[in-house]
Image (cartoon, rainbow, N blue to C red; front, top):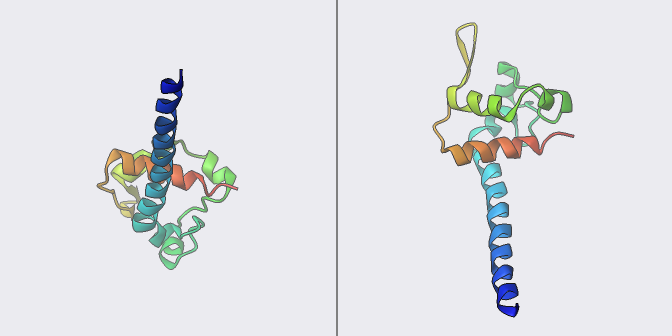
Length: 109
């Protein structure tokens, strides 16, 4: 029984570090790829964000208006409106895309 407990502790620590690393990765991916338009705070109040009509992701109604899958599709394929590119497609790993969407969800108030 002691051996089982001793094995469980490192496994739990590894899971905790992996979860924290993923959250940190999401913030890093967002900062590197999204913050220029959407802002560090997710409000979309940057010059570029205002020009392109970036949404305020701190607004719970905005967050409720799309699913994670829709957000991932937008990141993979980009967004166009009236033939104009509003957001380019991002060539990032599936894990990075999911982590950035998870981080984006933390802005909701």
